[in-house]
Image 1 (cartoon, helix red, strand yellow):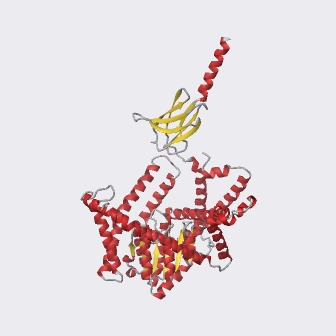
Image 2 (cartoon, one colour):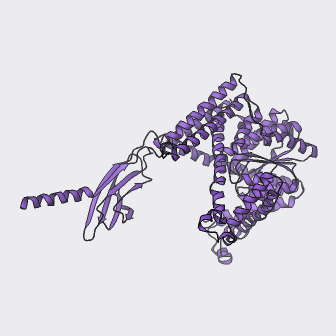
Length: 365
Length: 232
């Protein structure tokens, strides 16, 4: 009688111990700055408290919860360090302490970004292939972009009227690719204005953009052989403040009445204030941005709008350089690939297969 | 050399930043944060260039009494005032060269810089931002004028969204039975915003993303050089 009772007691003890577990593991495929904690406790637990004990530092409580099982990721840790964790489980009449430790490790690859890397590689290879094909003499058809074809018309009109052209390279700093794309368009535009001897005004919001814009316009005037016509004072800094910048440009538009306005780059809430003021002055207006929320404002108020990708394609389109035009074909290949992936993804999701979606979203690690 | 050195740096830096997006191991993450730090330092120095440009442009216009020179004078005076107040008495918790100016604070309630910031700059900025409401109204009026099929569709969609987003929409179609709830104005507006509108925006974002990949690749490979001022 005593033996089975002891066995039963032993088994219950084992099952109790098995039920209460706490583990700490380095987060896989990351930069070694986080540890995954997970716990599985008896459902009778009232409260769970997890704290981190690191060296001589006082214990820091990370989590206080009533859930008997769950997981938590401790972030912002130092790579390649050992961390010790303590879990305190509070029951009705008793409490239980469990310990776990893990070492953070820097990994050599973000596995969650594998899908992104594969897509990027395919698109990059396609772009490089088309560039080489263009270099080898293959000609590509590039559809007309009205917003860029109008550049001649705008310059011609400004020249006829003897009025300047206003060029706004967006309101972001030089670390925004849209600003870089805008400066490449400015380079082509400035070359044309130099040839036509038309004044170009470039107000800048950031000093870095100012330095780059000055250099770009100056080089364009040199290229056109008209350095004597270059006016450094026409490329100037206004202010870093968003609405101060807009007020300054509105003032220029109302006082100088430019014959053509170009708004190319990154724009936010000020887009409509700028474009609507320009519309009121009767200027030909061309805008280009990749900010999807600002595009409707530009479409309504401007004569021509470069939508999203067209802003980045502008430089290649204007240069007529076969190599750059070849890269535009690479974009088209990328679009085709993404359309195919969307169609296949939708079909798979309808069929209840989520692997493709999870792979691209980085959920498989 | 003037062209090849920047192109070489653009290639190296572009490639490292691209790699660091996929490699979380040091030194890649450290290099990227260092490069970001460098950008901030260069930006800090470049601010001086901006101030010089601002002063030079304004003084030129004032000195030559060019049209509207008074505005430029006002701009320069404002610039000088804010700069001096900030340097002399600081702002918020930061003391200036002459300390915290307790006497002036007792009189104005704030430091001179903060007083001007709160009572001159902020109202002016808010005024300009609020103009947006009127600009939206005038732009919307032009967009909704019926000229063809597209503008007709645009107007109908806009009316549904406007009505659906206001309380009047609930009043108009609130009586609809359960099986016709899709046609209830707020639900219709939500449908338009969630599906056709999101789909169109995502298409633009995807194409812009591809444009960014192409542009970056052209810059990294040195095919795109116009941002340096020329091709040669």
